[in-house]
Length: 239
Image 1 (cartoon, rainbow, N blue to C red):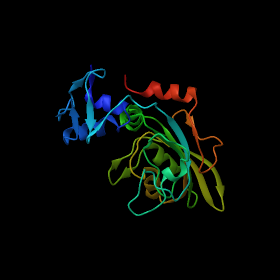
Image 2 (spheres, rainbow, N blue to C red):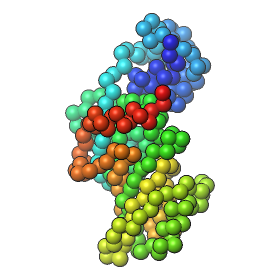
Image 3 (cartoon, rainbow, N blue to C red):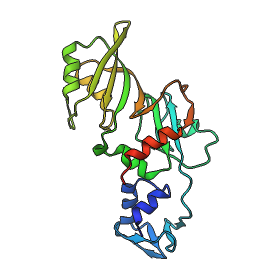
Image 4 (spheres, rainbow, N blue to C red):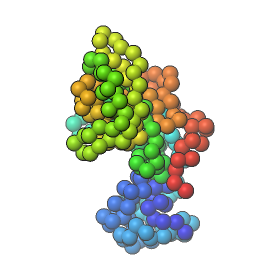
């Protein structure tokens, strides 16, 4: 037996949390009957589950893709305003995949996409504390005291940030390049942190998520993760 939301997530419907929302909204049926309790157990070999009228078959093969997202693309599968999305870059990828977290429109770098709902939940859950590292070109040259404050934690409008790892890398035309690692995932967090110390981000690039490194993957290109990279992902997923 298996919990309904976990069974749905294995089929790539969405993260387990989103699947719970679908169940609560009455969008899921088990053997023809609407089920609204997320804790419901199903027998994968016997029970027939449908979501919004569509039956789930065997779970699709799980795939894991690393994309070097350029600026000027939305980190979603569609956009009501007609802007370019990351799906425009995934040529010849037949499986339906979803981004794990986001990079805002003006940011670039490593974005992970998958149809593994369990992985999405693990990577985005604050309790997992998966480090994400960014290279950020900021306006001006922040003094050491400001970098220490950023490392210790800053107060944003939605509360204090957790401690971060901050290193000065170089300078270009009087603007510093910083490397910032955080494990939180708030909206535009790194940009807001830079604004708080008075040195707004001019360009932001994510270069790693945990042990996944962007490396020399060209801008706008993607690749499937290696076996070793997938093995690391499996280590952080809930048992």
